[in-house]
Length: 469
Image 1 (tube, one colour):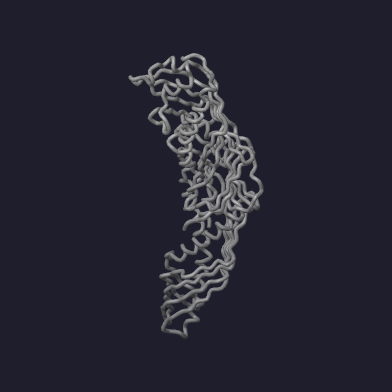
Image 2: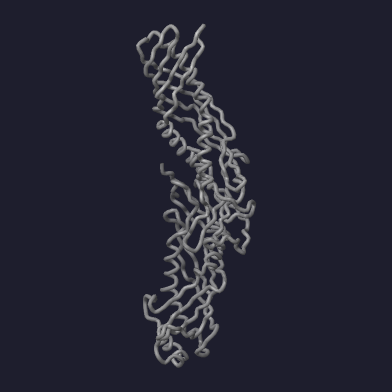
């Protein structure tokens, strides 16, 4: 149970504490209940596979001792009919396992100065209660960790059925076998839980949360502040910053505060702020991802040449009498601006397009340069644990920035340039967006029926989860 809860906590690398996050994660009571169910099943499976150490020792008997040895201990059945999980505001997580029962097979051997016997036995232990409280602090490197802060175990009834040669002595032996079994259960339950927590904590410390998106950018999902524990949910604030690959200088933006609405229908909520997407825009702008070259060889639908442009613009025909291939160089001149409104994800791009004639010796000659203002929208989906985007061109505006062929009306070129952008540039951008943006990586956990909602200032993913054993 603790492992999946820990995975849900996204315990991550160091970051600047208490700054506004770029990503918020909320784990609801529904998510914790599912984590409990999965955790109880994993615990049952592990207990049934476990090889327990032998128990041996002495119990006081009159003027002498009863020597016992219990070996080949194997749990054959475990039941947790009354397990519950709850949140303690400001503290952590409480796990209560109530009225649990175990069935154990084992070999036994017992002797006194008067007699001895051995055989196989079945032990049924019932009315076992475990209460454990886990905290989720940050360590001095900024990682979150998980620790067992308190634990208590009590056991009730122990019923032992022995098989052996001396049947008339079995009731006597059972009395002396119950004591070490009860003592072992009470003494070892909490240390075993603590050992398991320590192993999970080691896994958390090794989690790499600086995730590559592609060759150009990385995303930092490190924890930004202490997890906030409330009665109905746990909130985690993550840095949620996208950097150019290998360049971790902070972006020129400040994250604005935002609040996830009080919802509990889903197990998990992930809220990506406008700041998160704006740092992505900055990273890709810095890496040159918005610079695109279109040539005659790469143009899919027709061959672009000075002859085509000359048939529309007389000045180009006069300037370039001999037909030459044309090359278009597009670039963003400013960082594209991301805007999240109700049901709307838009990207405003300010750029330029320079048109070159490609001469026979492969040199180029600039014909003219235009300014471009593009309004685009992005439709979002989730596939294979990744956020997939699809770009749509809403509106274009052109203006002539510079011309080596003389002044001309830019409206003459709007149709052909719009067509080139729609058929060449947008599909190229969508091919890159279709590779997907990695969501916070939860080991062995799959998002189930995720739903995306875009509201003022952030995008919200509501999802259930499935854990693969």
